[in-house]
Image 1 (cartoon, one colour):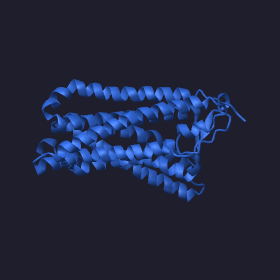
Image 2: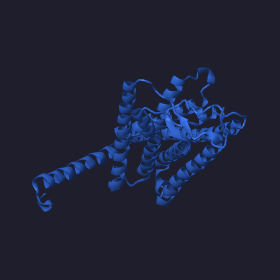
Image 3: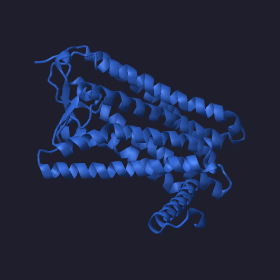
Image 4: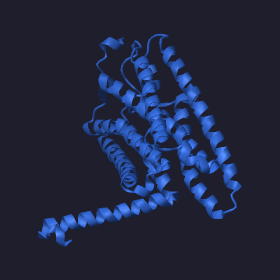
Length: 326
């Protein structure tokens, strides 16, 4: 038996005890991580460099990509390092930091998705008031509110979770420090405080979800009344990716928190955690870039600029060609 004051580290879930499979896990997570870095990095760079994309919708998308990058960087690199070095340990402070940053980024992302649904509602249902309701200052304030709300949520959950006495060992049955798994290590009814806080958070998530649903009901009603087929296509092209991201994010995240204990198992917990912590940050750039023509055009221009830059750099370095000749 141990208590929280004597715990200096936690043991994360070992996906396999075979060295070859551990290396396979490392390379698989590395490929996913690099795909997330590349996709979100390209979106951030394209939006920042193309003045045509300096609109509220793409401003919020840039923030979403930043949050996705942060969320996947909080969990995946540590799991990769453990697999590569054949270890399971994470320090007590490292576990607390992982919980804080993951909750902060995931909560802020959900609040931002709620703001983005309001952006789509105003753009399609109240286009004449779009510039007034979603000016530069309003967009900055809403994005800041999403980040601040995520920060407050993370502070409450992290402080509450790590103030609990732990006497059920230090083995966390997950590939990262996850609050539901840490609660299983508590040895008193004090964990009910965190359960109550999770319930309050889920109620807030439900309110946001209702707001998103109502917004999109109004959006789709307005879209179906549009006389122009091209207008309907453009509206759907900007709304459906956001709706797909919200659905993926909510369905996996809520199932991870509220699935009944009767169907819980280490394998299922692992799959669900990967679905809500690893998959969304990786596929979000793909979802948004597939149907958005403006973003695809910006990415195409960015690719051409990068090609020209590297081509000039190669000629300059290999053949000593003066840059002014290129």
